[in-house]
Amino acid sequence: MSSPGAELDYEVVDVFAPRAFAGNPLAVVFDADDLSTEQCQALADEFHLSETSFLCAPRAGRDGHPGPAGGPAADYRVRIFTPYAELPFAGHPSVGAAHTLVRTGRLPAGRLRQECGVGVLDLVVDDEGATLSGGTPTLEDGPDPAVLARAMGLSAADAVGVPAHVAGCGLPFTFLAVRPEVVDAARPDPALLGELGVGEGVSVLSWDGATAYARVFAADLQWGEDPATGSAALGTGVWLAAAGLVAGDGTSSYVVRQGERLGRPSVLSCTVTASGGRAVGATTHGAVVPIARGRIRVPS
Image 1 (cartoon, rainbow, N blue to C red):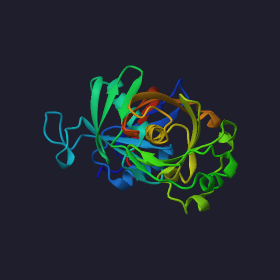
Image 2: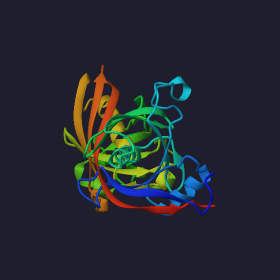
Image 3: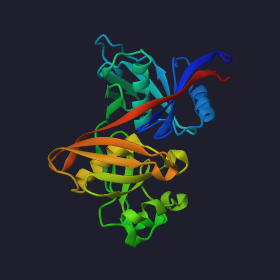
Image 4: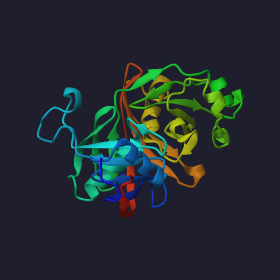
């Protein structure tokens, strides 16, 4: 455990951001190896952003030794916390952490391997931001779209007849396709959602053949709205393939627009690779803009 009263360096960056003060803000805490879970949680609550990334040395080094559970070696390890809980994986904390490590000179640009709660994942970092490859795609049947629409404060008639699968590449989300004009009217009902199996949250979205306009409501944010959700953007590709909305074989590109209703427009540029109508991989890329840096006390 880090000694109370000591200080750690941190940065705040905007992720999936087309400009500063857009996208999803993220706190990145450096040299967090000695922090306890309780100290990480206290710091995440202090920042009170949707997530905070705590950067640590990998459990396996960069010299070819096996990673966790005999897996591939990692370049660094990240622990991801909301103000309420630790997550095994999340998109914008992964993209923001990787780009910040490179921009501050702690790691070289190019392909990095990130160790997190779901294993070791690949990212490719460039000057603008980073591309994240998600974990193994997962797909399950979700709630009846009409029932889910009512739980999201909409009417059954607002759903457009596409199955509401629970899909993900590390964290599962449920995807509800609705008419474009009602996306901004969604209001989650936590009591009704608690009776449904929706994974980590619900993405309410419209689809125009190339772009999803989405609003994402996350259970780990007490059903608050998230301005940019990389894990949900990855899951969007899994859902698109399962729903037949992109090619069933090969790689398709798509864009997720999110955060606009919150005044934090976000752009997530994605791909999904499918075989036989089922996703076998997905990526999401976003820009990262540095906003602030400082030092923060280690809590007791």
